Image 1 (tube, helix red, strand yellow):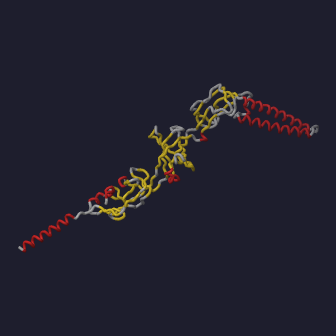
Image 2 (image 1 turned 60 degrees about the horizontal axis):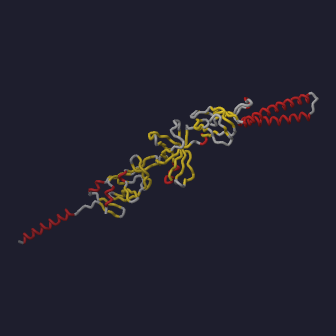
Image 3 (image 1 turned 180 degrees about the vertical axis):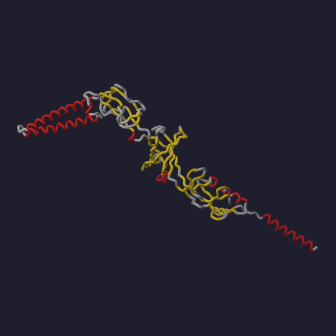
Amino acid sequence: MKHIKALLYSTLLLTSCAQKTVRTPVNSCELHGDTVIVHPQSVLAKKIHIDTITTKLLCQKMPAVGLVKLIPNQFAEIAPTFSGRIISAYLKLGMRVTPATPLFAMSSPDFILAQKAFFQAKEQLLLAEKKLTRQRSLVANGVGIQKELEEAQMNYDVEKKEYESARLSIRLFKANPDDLILGQPLIIYAPIAGEIVENKVVVGQLIKNDGASVAAVAELSKVWVAGHLKEKDMGAIRQLHQSQITIAALPDKTVKGRIFHINELIDESSRSVEVLMECENADHLLKPGMFVNVNFENTPQPTILIAPKALLQQSNTSFVFRQIAAGKYVRQTVETNGIQDNKVVVKSGLSKNDTIISDGAYYLLDAR
């Protein structure tokens, strides 16, 4: 009987030890503050994939809204500074012009008075020149008076200045004094090279010297685009390199913009800064006054890109799990800046050669 009891006791003892071994679980992970420890023998460890951070030279893109503008010195309104009536017109909308292209002719009383003053000054100069020549001849032959010669010389000098002044007045009307005919109409020429973009000229129309413009010329082969960069992107403003401009009506068409001026003042209403870009516009797709989409690009910078699955969100905070040792991961807050090449751009929080969980990080959210 004693032997049987001993055998039963031994059997119960072995069974009890075996049961304890089977019931001892292996914890998947443990949470210590912001650090999660994943046991290498757990199933969770096999679901986690890690990657080492590398950098890539990328141009950061910052979207903005832009407005197409005329280049100021390539646009001119035609408003004659002289009164008169239009007697003939030569301009048409869309016509290419140069500063030598006549636009219309007008009968101008101001121009007629300038013509009369010019011809009168010319006659007075010729008369003074004859008198001076005669006095010089008399003095040379010993029968003239020196005082009269000096008076003739002085009169000639005065008349010459009057003539030059009258000649200059004709030039102000963009007329050639050497080809001037008394009574000829005033020809209005294009002030700059470009094309006619506005035409309000009507034959018989009376123009006043303080009236509104009757036509406009613009050179549209190049235009400005004024983009407004948000205040939050001010950190990259000095590294701006170029811009890509798209039109809503033509989404497949892209125009490059050369950044040449960044405003020093912030627009208080929109909290943005104006950036001016010069764009080639040979096909006239960019119309002044048109709204466009602008993608600013800065100079290529070393950029950290991570897989979207690596990024987690909690409240208003974005974070990843960074590996600090084998099986140990700490919650690392990061600041992102959009998507590039289907990956998340990390602005701050990570450095090159950091190791993070690239897939499976969401399993650690339930760590206790």
